[in-house]
Image (tube, rainbow, N blue to C red; front, side, top):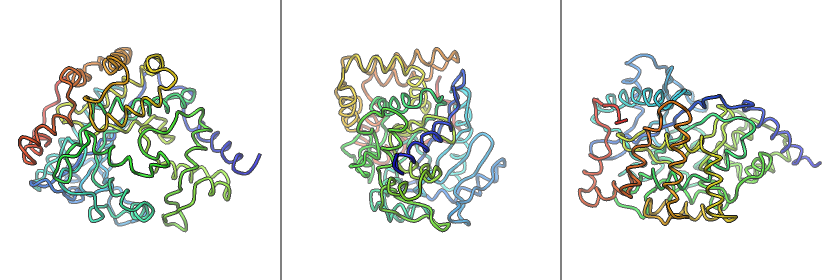
Length: 434
């Protein structure tokens, strides 16, 4: 066995051992929800000005960037954290692991209500939307973290799309015996989530060709390495996953207490240094596929949904959790309906869903309704009455209109002012209908 093969084998053992042997009887769930914060005219605000206002409410403490010690990059609480995103106009709200979707909803309601009130003190708005509508992706709004600066040096303008996008990421607890299946499944369902939950059609003050501008623009990120969106193929094992990811460029690396850009492939690093697990996890963090395994949480992270309209803000999370719970049934349906070419056909649907949303041709008759029915049954089996959170998804299917298609229509009729009024999360929030 050569040095690289030995390193891959050792990394695989450490990686698998990082997950619990079995998932909990009721899978815990968590959410990382990104929100654009804008001025009254729609330009990106600077959320760092909100830290003092948020701290004044109590129960939070400052979190500093390890590479830039004087930079506050978030506020940590018991139930939720606020995090500074790549762009200073975007804030991420992260929940603790929750037993149910209702628990996650309650925490998110509290955190976002607090955020909206703080933003209102500056005359700003928090948007239930997937991208900055006015301010373009540019260096001047990038948060001054050391690693972000190194990523910009490594990737150039492609990296700057992260300064404006706002996703709605869901974590679901998984076990060691299902890692490969869940990783493949999480990536396979990306076009389903995009078709139903895209919400970023207007940016740079104009309508784009995409329903999901987030996914459409970021698809260009190291496209030859399949670094964003759906991978080229399903993985055969965790060893196959680690070997494939290791073949990608090691964009940034830690050296002498600094984070510096790199141009070597991670396999070259392994061949030289052996099985450096912490280095692999650092490298893996900057591979942004639609689904990722998270060793530090023992979860599957599902990433392709845009931030949702506030009145329907649990829709993407509920759909994701339901699909994960129904994984065996959904996989069997997809493979039966699409045949041996299922992955290729879903990759094609992925590209079409990004552009056309619910107007994209589905890969099989009544495909989305069938998949959503499975997701609803998956939630029902959890026994927590969580299937009610899928009501917006059913409404979108009935109307054949996802949030992006609705937002584009509003923009075409009422312009930027209408879009901002439509996407703004209002003070004095009420709980979304359930």
